[in-house]
Length: 143
Image (cartoon, rainbow, N blue to C red; front, side, top):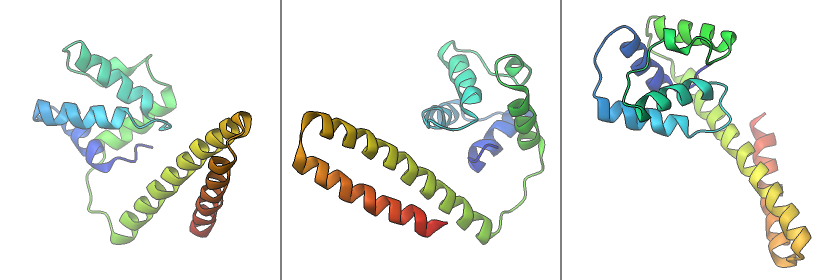
């Protein structure tokens, strides 16, 4: 599922033939494409490749470039009627994004811990272990 609601609306508008501000749209897609770990990353990569080659992207052009399940999810997201989200849905989305950020930060810290252990940097290792403990507590408190 594509979590970026604003991007979903913009992509849906373009898929339905509504013109968008190309400079703003391009910047928005570029930022979204750089977010690693999203299941929708192949979609963003296709759109980014189209921009790099100065071409408009098209929904049919995605076939064969992204997994069928993702294509189906994208079709539902692009063509569903927009509805106002509730405050609870927005809060849940923010919570999910925060947890995703913390999990990625934890992975980075674990890599740095391994590097510090190999190089023998004890002071840095201790600081990283405290950071790992703090982030782990934050993640657990969100569950």
